[in-house]
Length: 256
Image (spheres, rainbow, N blue to C red):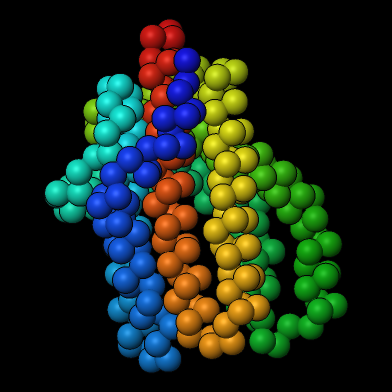
């Protein structure tokens, strides 16, 4: 049975690890508000690196949960976390290649007629091009929409197959991935994780930022506080959601 209570409590079981996770996300985000293009560019790069480190950490949360260990993972080896987060990103990109191929097949022709002339082309001409290619645009749009829905639903399971042993090729065991993904337990876990994420996002990002905006008129303070709330939210959700995913994967690991 998936232990949702442990998943909800897990981010708060070790305050020092929670603080490190929040600071990793928060510190580079502070510099995004600096009105300097160079500083913003550097900060953006650091934010991406921090996000990949957090991605690796959430994989560790899933992996340890699969092994029935609910203690928060250590932050020790940041390069290890970064590399695992980076590999998970590469896996996602590979799974997106079919979408790029589908887009090229169905949408390349109308886009190639519009984009090169975007500055000079009239709205009437754009409508004519779209009308002439309406069938391929509609078919391509439907296929892409279905693919993105399927990928969004299955992607956590793909990540879990990688996270269990950090073997790249296991992320492409399509038959096994689909067999585990299309189960009632996995569907419930995905649904609850989504509801929890939306609710917590509303509380952290929406409500707190709204209250602060009403009480504090300084835009810089509002921006910093908003970044802090986003950092806390990011870490809490990463740990909780991937603990849920790891728990359901553990329940399904013997399914053939």
